[in-house]
Length: 300
Ligand code: NAD
Image 1 (cartoon, rainbow, N blue to C red):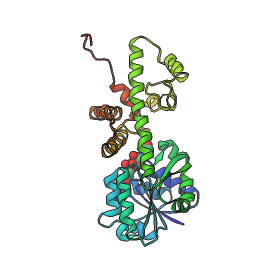
Image 2 (cartoon, rainbow, N blue to C red; image 1 turned 90 degrees about the vertical axis):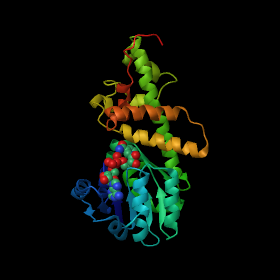
Image 3 (cartoon, rainbow, N blue to C red; image 1 turned 45 degrees about the vertical axis):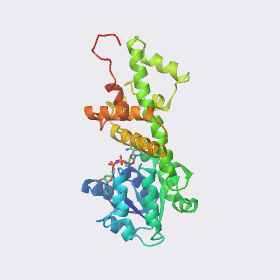
Image 4 (cartoon, protein in one colour; image 1 turned 180 degrees about the horizontal axis):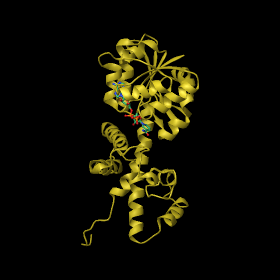
């Protein structure tokens, strides 16, 4: 099976490497020449355009930054819509607005091109080890067709429901993780103010009701979890800008659904502020370095 891969960036490269390891032939394209060159170095065949990838692949995978990139690759000039033969299956693994996934799927369906949304969790380590969690929206038969390729990149491939529901699951997950990063950072700053050893507090919370994945696996306080980004000066990991984008997707979805969201909105704003103070390309847990005691001595 020939796999087309569009978007060979931070996540795309290690995902593509795992497809090659499982003996899939991959034809790749990225607008950034260095990203495409890296994919070719791994063993993919380089293509000159989205259209060429769409024409040369049986199954097309995309891993792009955000909704606008996905719309342009699938529906813009020289897009998948214009180039893919009827019957082709496309799998978009980017994290985007579920509404955009639905619109893209509906437009492709007019030309008998099939579409799954299949965003991932697990970050660069999961992409490298081939252990991503992959949450899939779309037709169950299409998922079975894509499953061998998806299983080369992830260990948990979960069918969530109709098209768009993979994205819905992903943004709900990241809403919780993003809020938790801010909450853990605030809690540890308060404890520090009382002179509580963060190691002891971690021990207490891990045995109590505040326990959370963010503290266990991605502790915002440096030096407590060896593999956490905080222990390597917050090198991502998962960038603050991407987490702020995902919280934005959740907040927008909530607005459209008329669901009141207060905590997600607040966490998104804290991450945006951290980004505007130079932390955008650091890991999202670097928000801890942004939440600091004020020098103001006045009582609050
Ligand atoms: P990235 O920016 O490193 O890679 C995206 C690639 O897409 C880039 O190389 C870019 O040049 C390419 N691209 C953009 N427009 C294009 C176009 N029109 N045609 C071809 N290529 C194009 O981003 P990433 O970190 O790999 O993330 C990709 C997606 O995965 C995002 O939606 C992100 O939210 C999600 N995600 C990322 C992580 C992570 O840890 N980085 C984890 C889970 C999910």
